[in-house]
Length: 260
Image 1 (cartoon, rainbow, N blue to C red):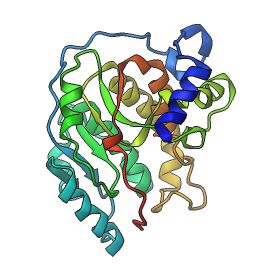
Image 2 (image 1 turned 90 degrees about the vertical axis):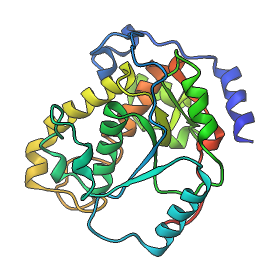
Image 3 (image 1 turned 180 degrees about the vertical axis):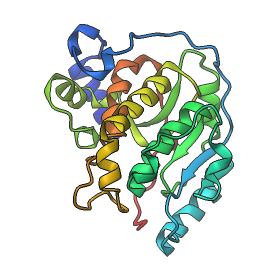
């Protein structure tokens, strides 16, 4: 049904074509569209997951993690605070505001950092019953494509931006990737712009982050960054900009299950 609905919306709304003049003063226009990419096909055959706190996973979360390990058919690396230093590149340190982010938004930051600098797969710690290997192979076999993931679930799953960009995100949701699981080639123009805008937003919020560090969910008094503002609000507009560089795979859509 989800596939049929997406196809209906595609026929009804047409295909999106990005134009810089359409979004003046929005971050998408800071860097012109580019197709230059020299790392085509080089993707680590690994899936990264992040657990950013010192607390233990709940029993439900452990259960879905074990389910993931038994079904995806690709090595899964759970990155914890102790393991994180192994992946921080000397010439590309984390933003100084990272330590003040909520645990949830630390994961948002890490998925961008890892997909840009390392590439490979990313997923939230969710349950899967389908293998990922063919999705890796499909992306590797298409030099002109940069990211593969599941299709967004609908308008309600899209970053709730205002103005023209918000209207376009809702209208063309069927051309967007969900941000809970995907496979990326490293150092593409997409990940570069994602990483650049993420750091711009971190710069903007840094002083307030120091004053009001986040708790687990970032719902404590004074925490300055709203939900999804450093993830979906960057990722989804970039999906529109580079929609011709995306691929879709139903295998990367997780199974609904209580994981908290």
